[in-house]
Image (tube, rainbow, N blue to C red; front, side, top):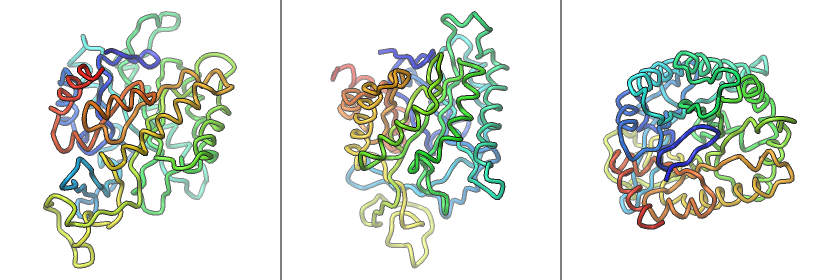
Length: 348
C-alpha cells in the first residue's frame, strides 16, 4: 500500500498526526521504528518554543469512545531541536526512505505587521539547512528517483492559543504567508510543503481556501502546496469531568467539573470524524474539479477519528491519500498502527 506525495515516499498510508505523543526524541524514534508507520509527523514547533504549562495544557480521554479534548498549545521544544532530532534519526537510518513531516507554525502578527511572514521564512530556512546537511535536496538536474525524507506541514489551525485565532479561518489573510512558501518552493522544487487546516463548516470557507490557493499558482512547475491536512481539532468544545477517564492533573474549584483546565478545548477522535470526513471529501472534490489545473495535484491527508480500519477506509473513500491519527495513538500507543494496517488490508 505504498503512496507518494511529490517525491515523498510512504511505505504505508498510515502515520501519526502532529500531537503531544510525538513531542520528544523518544516519541519520534519509537514512531519511526514501527514497521507499520509510513512516516512520522512531529509535534508542531515554533522558532523559540511554546511556553507549555502542565497546569493548563492537558488532554482528557472520553470514557466511552476514542474521543479526546485537549487544551494543548504547541511544543515547548523549538524547531532547531526537532531538526537536530530529525537529523539524528535519519542519519541512523540511512537505508530507509521513511520520511519525517516536520510540523511548524509561525509567530503571530506584531507591531511591525510582518512578524508572521518573517518567522515563517526563518522556519523554512532552518528546514532547508537541515535538508542540505543530510543531502535531502537533489542536485540540479539530478532529482530523478531521489527520495525526499523531510517534508513540512504548516499548522495554520490550532484553536487553543489565547487571543490568536487560527489564520486559516480567514483564508484571504494567508496570502502573504502562502507567498513566502511559494518563494521557497520556487527556489527548491524538492521542498514539499502542506497546510494543516481547521474543520470548516460551511461552503464558502472551502471555496475561499481554493481561491487563495489559486492566487499563488505558478505559471510553470507544481503548485507550492503539496498537500492539505484535514482536519485539526474543533475548538470551543466542552466535555464534563464525568464524561472522561480519571486524570491526574490539578483542578481548581472553578474547573473541577470540566474535563480540561481551560474548560474549552480542541475536540478530536471519534466525535469529530464525520466533520473531518466531510472536509476531506469536499476539498478532494474541489481540488480535482478546479478550473486551475495546478490544484489537481494537491493531495489530502485525512485526520480526525481514524481510530480503526473502517474509519481509515472511509477517509480513503472520501479522497484522502494518507491518513493520520492522534487520539488512538494517545490511548493505545504505537501498536495502534499495526491494528490499522492489518485492518485496512482486510477492509480493502
